[in-house]
Length: 600
Image 1 (cartoon, rainbow, N blue to C red):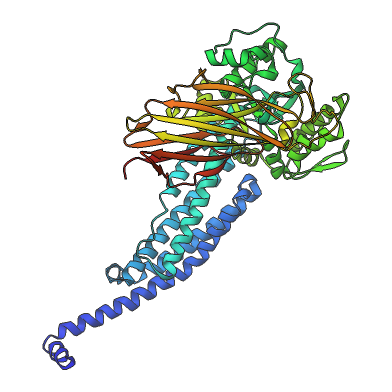
Image 2 (image 1 turned 45 degrees about the vertical axis):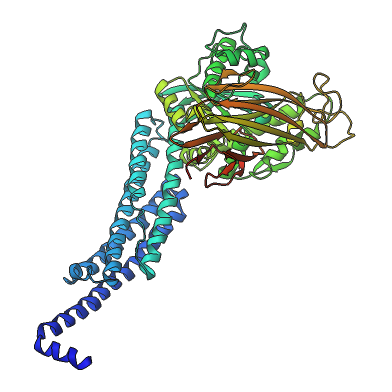
């Protein structure tokens, strides 16, 4: 065999030339790719630095540092690119099996790293241009629109750089995977930045505006939270000044207001004065209605017309402390941070004032809110860092915003910060809210779970049974207190919990006693739970047109609770349980969409 090959090469000398050429291409091409790969490592390390220090982009010093590392990366990539293209054999080497694939992969990685670095430099420049307007108090909606467009363009560019590894192997394949992961993390961070820009537009959309801030206790007392106080902010450019504040009990319109309303909102919530008293505007699930009504009530009660209404609950306030750092409260000699904030204001503070006047407790809450606002105003962090932090609270409906400007309101709704529960696929959306009906602080002790059982019928309809379990962990045998009750109205013994439990079913569904509210169909019931026990509520919803294209879709929107609702889902069709490919058990902290295929 060997001798035959030798005779063939001898009779055809061009074969030996070709073999030598192939060997040269492989080694020289591989060497060139290896040299450029080694040189590119320094560039990728600088990209890695930027990915790990993205939060530095919120200050000019930080942006300068990130820009320096990106400039180094660009120069190092230029050097690597030069090494890669020095030898003319590379175009041929790319077609050699195995080696050629890695050479082509290295070239793609260099090109993509170039684009990532250039995109980062351009975006940092844009952020610096907008941030520079802050001290001059000239920040306008046009500046934010320009930045908004550049961030969207950066997201699109970086998203396109996540190429599959394919047949790449060894260090090239590994580094492509690492690069893809870093790009994905940067894209996620930029999405949060973009969400923050949309929020900023709601505040800085005009040269001068009035912003009504509604601090909420927690969602367990209303669908969106219990409004205990208010703060009126005057915003001019980027200068924010608190002009007035007070308890929500002082904001009551002289008479009920003729605000547009659905039949369900009127029947379920108007009895509490939802169109007259600021405390009761947010039992409904639609903050776009709540915000507009709150603005109308505030104007009728005080004569001040506001441009924006912002509701922030306890988890949102805690997230702000992640940016500002711990907060010292002099009157209580306590240091609050992101970890203990919720427990202190929703539990410990009530234990400090168990009976008698709650004036001191409310005064301490007011002091905490004022100190937090002062900390934000005096912080060395700029607006973008706060907005990026706040944006993370939107999916869980902990931060809700309304704007009088229709264009800004539309952007807020698209972002999901309007609190609408029917803005995406209303024909498949469910929303559960458990709201305390006891004038005490028992909701801190109450934990909620739901089991959703779906039976899909051959005609494309579906029957949905929702079992709600409310567990009261309050201790038994306690003395009456403000935290444990009783309130003498709905609760008669300490620790007795009474809830208004509401379920919004999909648009077009048939629910006994259901009325259209917040774009869906609302039904409600009352549940009584004694301490150290559980009680249940049951809802039945019939969806006549549940199946589309052989698929059943279930969308769940959370109540913005301190303790997310534990949720279990079972879907059956013709005696078989279906899977959506995702977990059927979860803590419902953000909206979830699950799709089940009926075709095996």
